[in-house]
Amino acid sequence: YHDFMFSMKASHPVVMIQAYRLLASEMMKLGWDYPLHLGVTEAGDGEDGRVKSAIGIGTLLLDGLGDTIRVSLTEDPWKEIDPCKRLRSYAESYLGKGTVPFVEQSRNIAEIKRRYVRQVAPLHRDGSVIVWGEGEVGPRGDAFFNGKEITYDEGTLTVQPLETFQMGEVAHVKDGDPSTWKRLLEVSTPFILLEMTESYLHQGRRFFDWLRETKLDLPVILMGHYPSSDEDTVIHASAELGALLADGLGEGVLLKTNLPQEKESSLAFNILQGCRMRATKTEFIACPSCGRTLFDLQEVTQKIRARTAHLPGVKIAIMGCIVNGPGEMADADFGYVGSGREKIDLYVGKECVERGIHYTEAVDRLIDLIKQHDRWIEPSQLVESAT
Image (tube, rainbow, N blue to C red; front, side, top):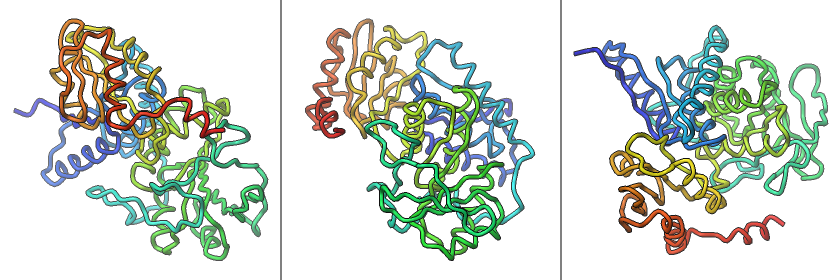
C-alpha cells in the first residue's frame, strides 16, 4: 500500500525540522518519494503561534521540503488559512534564488550544534547575543543601534560606533562576495552584523561556512530587512532568520521593519524563543481544539496566559482532551488537560498529579502547582527588576 503521506509534527520547531530532514534523508537513500505534510503541532495563538509555525514550516519549505502544510492555531479554524497562504507565497518567492555553488560544511542535520563563538561581546548564559532594537524599545531592550556608519575602505564592509556601550566597532557585512569578507580578518570587532539584501538564507549559510573555514569565531547578529505588511513581516522574518537560528547559525537578531518599535522588539524576542535560544516569557503549548474538547479552549488559553505569561523558561500546555493531550504535551513543564465535561486534569511534566478538578478552580490550582515547584515569580518582582 503506497497511497499515503508522512507527517512528523512536533510542538518544538527545531525538533520538527530535524525530524523531517532525517526522514527526507532516509527516503532518498531508499529511493522513496512519498509526500510530506508539514506542521508545528500545538503552536498556540496570536503572534507566538505564527512565529513558531513559520520557523518550523518555513525552514523546510525554503529547503524544498514539504507538499502540504497546516498552521495549527488555538483560534477559529478559518484563521489558520491566512498564515498558510503567506508561507506558501514566501516559499514560492524563494524559487530560483540562491548563491554561488559551494560544499556546505557548517551544518550536520543528524546533530545540530551551536557554533563555538568567542565571548567578546555581551552574551547570555545560553550563548545568544543581546537583542538589538532601534531607539527606545522598552525596558527589556539590551542594546540599541544608533544608525551611524563609518565606511571601511571601499566596498560593503562597514563598522558601527557604539560609544554608549563602550564595545568598540562592530563589523557590518552587507555583501555576498567572499572577497569582501576577508577584511573581517583585518579588523578588531566584538561581533558581526550580517545583512544580506538578496537570498538571505542561502547567502547566510555560505557566510557561516566561510567563518568555519577561516576559523573566525566571532558572534554574528542576523540583521534582516522586512518592509512588507505586519502579517508578512512576522511570517517572513520568522521563516528566514529562524531557518539559520534553528541550525545554530547566528547568536542574535536585529530587525528593520515597518512595525512599531515595541512590536519589532517583541518579534525579535519571539523568534529567539521559538528557536529555543533565549526565553523571555512563558511558552504556551496549546492545541487547536476539536470535537472532543468540552470547554472553550480559546477562552481558557487567554485566561491562563493573562495570569502566567510572565514566567520566562516555563512551558505550560493547554490541551482539549486526554486522547492526544498527554502525549503531545510531553515537552511541557505543566499541563492543563480536559478530562470530561467541566473537568480538568493537571500535570507536572508527564505525570498527572490532580484529576477531575472543576474548571472554575483549575486555573488557580495550576498556579498553585507552579508555586509549589518554585517556578513562580510575582509580576511585581519583574517590574522592580526592569526598573
